[in-house]
Image 1 (cartoon, rainbow, N blue to C red):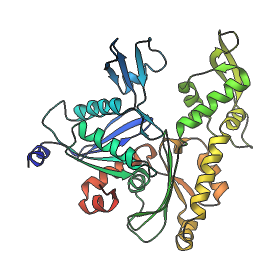
Image 2: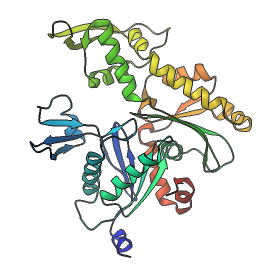
Image 3: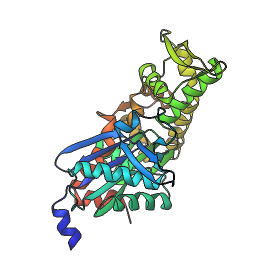
Image 4: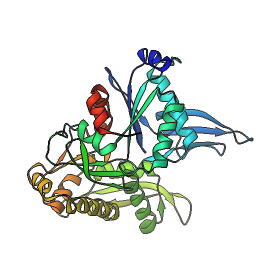
Length: 344
């Protein structure tokens, strides 16, 4: 009863707890928070942690902190890697949404990867309850992304969604409120960034940060064989001399660097297509694949997937916010929330 009364004074929240970014959707207001999933923590001599900054402020500190301060990304591969820091991050964001009011117990729906284990689910639920939730629902990210992308998930026809986040890529075929076939791949934007870092280290003996790699990835993306060669300057630290240096690299070399994670993604999509029932596979010839998540914005990814699968490939209207908007829509519809959330 007490939780019910507190709920009357709170705003229900949908949270896309991503490896790279956390987005929060408030019922009646839309998306109110879109910040990096980064927390800056100061450790005292006794080992106690003190949170210094969360979100954008903390991301600005990545790789630039002194020994006693560390900028942590508490989620790895789409799931909680540091329970305590995730809880603090959620508390901070929820307090920010509710203008630091204490007596609020919001209903919260959280997007999770489709391949999540029972232990990982418990960690997400406990983090949300500890951060002040009154009720917690979990929704699989591909389902939330499909709802957010406006796909007709209630109809008896195939809706294929590929949601490429920072830590995972979620591939699913959805029909009649349910996921018919799915694969959660621990390959996302971070793996693409890491592939660029490793390639430049191997080929040029140059160390660069993941922030630089991300900029290269988004700006030059996956060039096609027929594309004109574009040269770019990259600054980093020479691994032999330790002195800052600049190199020139071509857009085709960047494509070569990204081949391994790209091939893993293509292979996973083909595996899901191969195991899809024939009746639903027939629907996909016309409807094709919808891309969501930040990775969908990589230049030419849709063209490459179209060539590989021979199916139509479209990018959702606002791919970055599909998961949180879909979870937000589920909050508004009691029937939908019962049908699409993971049972407790």
